[in-house]
Every structure is written in C-alpha cells, then in structure tokens.
Amino acid sequence: MEFTYYPGCSLKGSAEELDESFRSVSEKLGVTLKELPDWACCGASSAHMVDAYLETALPARDLLTAERLGRDVVAPCAGCHVRMKAASMKILEDADLSRQFPFKGEIDIISGIEMFHKQDVLKRIKERRSKPLDGLKVVTYYGCLAVRPVEVVAPEDPENPRQMDDVLEALGAEVLNWPYKTDCCGGSLAVTRTDLVIKLSKKLIDMAIAVGADAMVTLCPMCQANLDTRQADMSKLSGKNYQMPVLYLTELIGVALNDSQATRWFEKHMVSPKNMLASKGLI
Amino acid sequence: MPQTGYATSTGRIAAPQADLAAIINQCYQCGKCSAGCPVASEMDLMPHQMVRLAVLGDVDRIAASKSVWLCLTCHTCGARCPNGIDVPALLDPIRHQILRDKLDTKGSPVPVFHKTFMDTIKTFGRVYELFLIGMYKLRTKKYFDDMELGMQMFKKGKLHLLPQKTGSLSEVKQVFKKSGLK
Ligand code: SF4
Ligand code: SF4
Image (cartoon, rainbow over all chains, first blue to last red; front, side, top):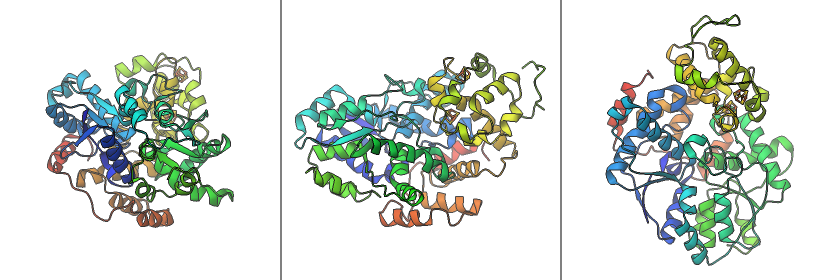
C-alpha cells in the first residue's frame, strides 16, 4: 500500500510527534508514505475566512502535483484533509476553477483515520500488535474536522463516529462511551480568544475525567494542542490539578506495536502520558 | 434580492448569491443551529437569527455583529440543520467583503489573526509559528498573553527558531497576486 503524504505545517511545527509516530507506525504496518514534493500550506482555518479564491487556489497547486504522481493522498491533519478535499470538490464543480487548475479527480484524498481504518491495515494492526493495550480506558475525541463539513468528509455517522474506536479496540484498549466525541474545542480561536477555548476544552476534559478515562485520543493537531496545552490554565482557574494525557491515535498504535521511538514522542507533550502508561505496564 | 418590509439594510454588504439564497431561504427557524452552537451564549446574534436576517435582506446587521467573528467554523449547525444550511457558508462571503472594503471589525482580534496567518503563508509558503505569533502580538499589542505557555512550548521543542522552506514559494506568491487579498 502506497500513498502520497501531505504532512502540513502543524506536523512540521508543534505536532512533530504526530508526524514521527504516523510515519513510524505506517512503516511497521507495511504502508509506504512518499512526501509530496514542495508542498505549501493548505490555508488552514484562515484562508476561507479572508478570501474565496485563496481557499481553493492554495490547496489546488498541491492537488495538481499529487495527481501527476498518481497516488492517493493521505493527510494526517484533520484540517489539511478537509481543506484539500473541499478544494478538490470545488474545482470539479466550477468550470472557471477547473480551467485554471486542471485537476481531474483521479486521485482520492483520505484522512489519517480513514487510512488506519482500511480493512487491510486494521487486519495488520491486529496481527502485529505485540503489546495489546489491556486495561487502558480511553475516550475518542474526533473534534470537528474529522466529521464536518459533512458534505466534504462524508462520515458514516457525524454524531457518533466509530473509526478511531474500531482501531483502538483492535489494539486492545477499552473505548468508553461519552457524549463529546465531536464537540468543538474552540480550535480556530486558539490564539485570539483563549478564554473561550479554555472554557470549551475544559468542558471536554471534565467529561473525560467523569467517565473515568485514562487518556483522550485524537488525530487532530489543533485539538491535541488545545487540550494538552491549556490544562495548566484550567488548573490555575479551578484550583484543581488537571493531568489528562491527550494522545494521538498513532502514538497508541506505536505503543501496541512496541515501537521503540514511542517514549521520544511523549517528551513533546505538556501533560506527560508516561506515568499513566507505565502504571499499566505499557511502556 | 427583493426588499421586504422588515429590511433595514443600507445594502453596503452584498446579499447572498442566488445559489446560497436558494438554500438559506428554506430556513423555518427551528433553532437547531443555535441549540448546538458552542459559542451561542457569547453571541450578540445567534446563528438562527443571522440566517433570518439574511433571508430578510439585512446582511449589514450580520456584518456589524460580534458573532460574525465569533463563529468557530465548527460546522455543527450545518451538520444538524434539517434544511442543509451551514452558517459559515453564509458568513464567509460577508467576512470577505468586510475585509476587502476595510469595514469596521469592532476591534476583534480574529480578523487580525487570520490576515497575519495569510501574510505568513505569503512570506514563507508554510506556517512559521514564531513569525505568526510575533506579528500578531505586534498588531494587537497583546505582547504578554501566553508568555509562559510560549516558553514551555519552546522548551519542549514545539516552536522552531527557523522557518521551514518550500520550493514552491514563487508559485504561492503568484496565487496571492491573483487573490482579492491585498
Ligand atoms: S437549523 Fe436550519 S432551519 Fe433550523 S433555524 Fe437553523 S438554519 Fe433555520
Ligand atoms: S459553525 Fe459557527 S454558527 Fe455554526 S455551530 Fe459552529 S460556531 Fe456556531
């Protein structure tokens, strides 16, 4: 199995542990990733706010390169995936845009979650896991862009997605039922309205604690950053001590595959998951 | 769009284009969008009110609201609306015009951030977090917000000193030249 890999800016910046764990476990699962040459930013949460042309034109260049290479694209970041896929749909609908950007729609743009949920990959996960995540209780946090906009992502169930749950169950973890799988953490206001972001993220973490989760699992770098970095503020505001590990799905795949790199990824977390994982005998 | 008795718009902000109008005019004010909106309690106009105002032709009032810059683009409203109405699809063209025509943004830091983000892309082709945050702080004079967090992230190696390069910067600059963003 081979994909063109679009890492996007977060994975080269504050979410390096997602880039590293994604590449490492893909290789262990026999999935070859080839980085898209000379990729540029997809426009993220900003381009669509300021200009309709940029929203499509920024990802369009990279879509054309990817189509020339002929392989389907995997974009681990939920935000990049939505921007790339939305742009590809817009180009195909709009005669003017498709003249400027002759993208034919011959390749697929899939998310990281979709890649690990492919039947072949799931099967290999089950076969190759050498350290099942026994005794680990998690909640899955998809956030917005793994399921919405629904016409772009086309999720099976936008209110109760199951793909990450399936992967984690294949790893041996216990996936808890909770109500906030797809509630927004405030991502797009992360820098501008931290007060709101802390409020929205705290609501999520409080619920994860209430249902007894050892960790929250996501595949969105914006969600992970908000939930992980804002716990110090939450502690200050509430007088409680917030210590909820927020892990990338790929990091837990790595733990179950006994990836020797895993402890290095955890160094990047503000709330270290090391003690919790060690207490379960997982690292 | 034909004016109704309710409309107070001066027509400064363009009414929704025909294809969008055809969708939003199906709104029957059930309020489901506002019920699920994570920031409804902070808004001066709630999502269902913004949709109603657009149907009535008073887009100026939406443009003058705080809500237009509070919306998170989380698309919860769009996923749940029984008529397939996505509030960000209504707001995006309004936000574009506010910025293009340099209309009042009521001191909201949100448009400043997004414009700074785009300046970063225009300059480097990719996000360069230190530049983005530094420019944003200069432009909003919020020098000391999140200083502690920034230091911690730096120590963890989450913020890089140097920008990453893309070999396609000149093409990215071309894309910006063709855009409405000046
Ligand atoms: S959910 Fe849809 S139909 Fe109901 S009020 Fe909101 S926009 Fe109108
Ligand atoms: S997209 Fe905007 S209006 Fe719709 S639910 Fe989210 S924040 Fe509210």
